Length: 268
Image (cartoon, rainbow, N blue to C red; front, side, top):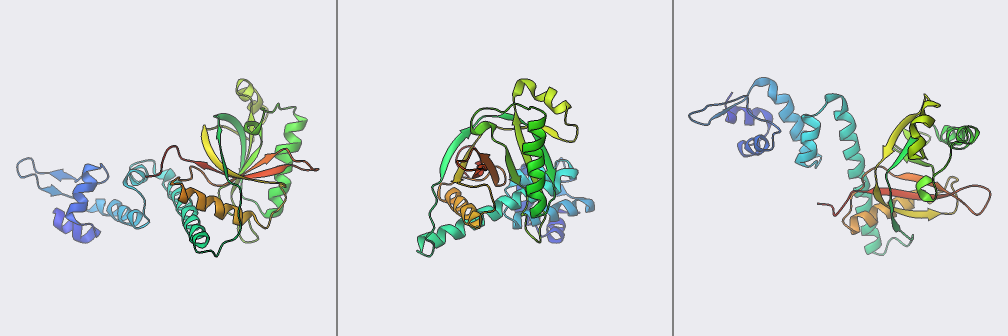
């Protein structure tokens, strides 16, 4: 069909279709070598409508290209990751408005640190709030201690939990428990735990708030909102979901840093 007919059926203007062709998102099925007229196939309508939907979500063209031109098996996960980041930014803007209008009085000391790339063992599960604590103790504390797995020094060696979704009475995550391990011994250690995944946490900056206890904290959501507001105010974007880093405490149990990994450079 002609570009005009395809535009009418897809909801995209001819100008947008030319833009998406140039970006490699939606090349025409055929281009007349003499006139340059573009023609599209009926089966391209599904991709066109997917692009329209993703643009309505506010997804940049580069990310849309990764979704519609990449592996279909990972498309849903990529869209979910984008939306998590968009929701985080939305909460940050709302918290920033409350702060600027004087309706927000809580203050948290937000700091930024650099973390190196680390190999780590991880366990990815959907859990209830009770299972979150029990499985975390079993994986992070008991199993690693009994196996004599060495720890890296400092905060780079601290275990942490990535919240890929909320864990509440109504929502079961998922979450990912992560335990950094020494690079030189990573493969050998991983061979002892066939149920765990060995992967690399890339080098990154992260903004964080230190909390004195790793126990359930009623202010945790306020801390997360403050981190979101900080990223918006400083023109940064989250690279991954919120994580809870278990650091040495002064009492019986560990302390906790609520942290958000940051994308490199300024947000565009």
